[in-house]
Image (tube, rainbow, N blue to C red):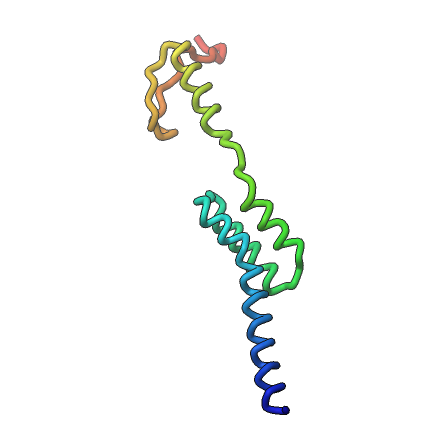
Length: 112
């Protein structure tokens, strides 16, 4: 009876450990499956939840993995291209900041 209970105890502990680690990997698997842009943030939050036993990190990881953040850069780039077109400037998609064309108007400092 002792041998059966020892084997049962070992199997139970290993099974609970596998279940616990599988539960903690749910946010990472969700983010990986959907090719989430914040995959590393989700992984860090899941690891923090695992090591600190703070469930708030795990909930945050599930929320970040479950929702895609809206793309704010594309509308701003479209506005910038439209304004450049209205100003009569050439539109170049990959212009580094230092090589950007100078504006057509110049601020007059009051010097002759």
